[in-house]
Amino acid sequence: MVVSRFAPSPTGYLHLGNARTAIFSYLFAKHHRGKFILRVEDTDRERSTKEFEEMLLEDLKWLGIEWDEFYRQSERFDIYREYAEKLVQSRHAYPCFCTVEELEEERKKAEEKGVPYRYSGKCRALSKEEVEEFKRQGKPYTIRFRVPDGRVVVFQDLIKGHIAINVDDFGDFVIVRSDGTPTYNFVVVVDDALMGVTHVVRGEDHIPNTPKQILIYEALGFEVPKFAHLPVILGEDRSKLSKRHGAVSVRNYREEGYLSPALFNFLCLLGWSPPEEGREIFSKKELIDLFTLEGVNSAPAVFNKEKLRWMNGVYIREVLSLDRLVEEFMPFLEKAGYKADKDFVRKVLEKTRDSFETLTEGVERLKPFFVQEVSYSEEAMAVLENEPSRRVLELFLQKVQEGDINAQRVKEIAKEIQKELNLKAKEIWHALRACLTGELEGIGVDIMCDVLPKERVLHRVIKALEILG
Figure 1 (cartoon, rainbow, N blue to C red):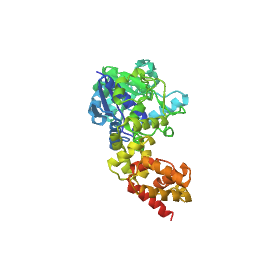
Figure 2: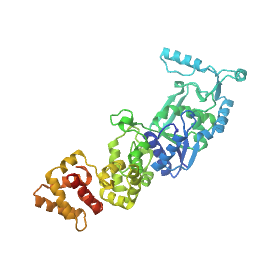
Figure 3: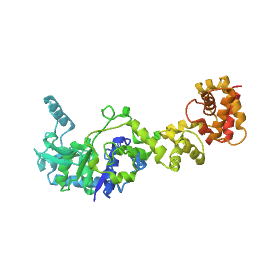
């Protein structure tokens, strides 16, 4: 059975690169009807927080990622101690009593020679008696993995292809710190092996870690999983993705009013090509059915925020049911301080869902439907103060007093006023829009009159006329 995992550290918000890794790992497992594991790597006691963990889990759930098993590394320290001891007993690892100052001195000498630093291995040759004496003296120590000399670790990456790395590039590395906490490269192997992970899907920045991990797998007698290292995501200028490209956290996009299925869909297409060329909108079920690692490009993906906005707009206009859109929209409306019942919001969105691309933009654009009193922009006030506008509003008020008011009736009235006052159509609509919305651009007057209760339309016309004296 295929088993994949996502293993984030709760040291900050879930950013887009990590979210994409989670999605690809999840899709791969589900495509093969396998198991997907979420494992929180919280061994960094200084930087890991419960608050970040809670936000991480919440954002993953919001994205639509469900996990079959859940683990925290901080709850597995006894297991790591056991396996570290096994490595020491089998002489694949050894205690290192070098002080911070000694290691710093080694690093300086390497810099002076202009060569990459690697640990000298001076504690490798300590006898059992020397080790016991140092421990008796209470000297702090780390545990280092004994890297075999001259070995070239070779693996076939499922995305990057053939990779070979000489272990002489890094030398003996620490697997347990002096405070007893295990390091990433050690615990990730123990966890992946014991959890039965068959495929490790992660970012290509982990490639340098892979040979170290393969050596630990071999030393512990574990089967080595298959690795798939995802290409980096670049900004449109081909530089490393950063905030200036719009690379903020998943939570930030969520708060801006992006929809979870739209963001999920968008991130899937960052570096993965679906079999159907030209098609870009997919349901989660379709993505599970279609996803393969063979479809992942080994070249960097390019992040395009405008495309994300466009895709979010497609989901708002065409993909989400109206009821789901209302549910998504209501919290943003309430956060902005507007009160409206769902039936009215439904009526508004039914007519206007094609006019905005994010929910926060929707709240701003649809404000005239939800405010009790309209406030006029300078441009709107300038239009209202024109003498023709006053006459337009007076005639409009007379004509809408009787009967129902709707889009068709407003268009008829506008034509009648145009004929009676001998004005351009633009002058009629500008006056009505300024009066009903307080702006000169935005939602159409006909749509406003189709949705707003008649008494609110009348109230706004009367108020505008009162202001004009």
